[in-house]
Every structure is written in structure tokens, then in C-alpha cells.
Length: 61
Image (cartoon, rainbow, N blue to C red):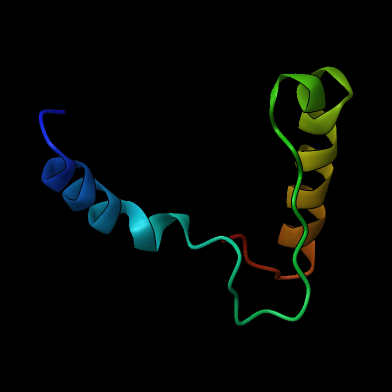
């Protein structure tokens, strides 16, 4: 990055992709997939949630 203007352009480009705090859904399940979450078993939890979601026609976002 060479300037604040370039940083602002990057921010604008990715703003819609990281709009995690707003949602049209009533319920949201967030699984922390950072290092400590993975060590604590988050990967297995996420797999089960995805499997159950497929069986009940839920969608991931």
C-alpha cells in the first residue's frame, strides 16, 4: 500500500464481503475458527452443524 486512498479503495471493495454483524436472519450460529477454537474442537462442531443444516434444508452464509 502506498497511500490512504489505496487503503480506502481496498476497504470499499471488501466491505460487503465482511458485513457479518448485520443479517436478515433471525438466528445465526457463529463458530470461532481461530487457533484456540480449532484446538477446542470447533472444526468438529462446524462439521456437525453443516451436516444437520443439510438435512433440514438450512443455508450457510
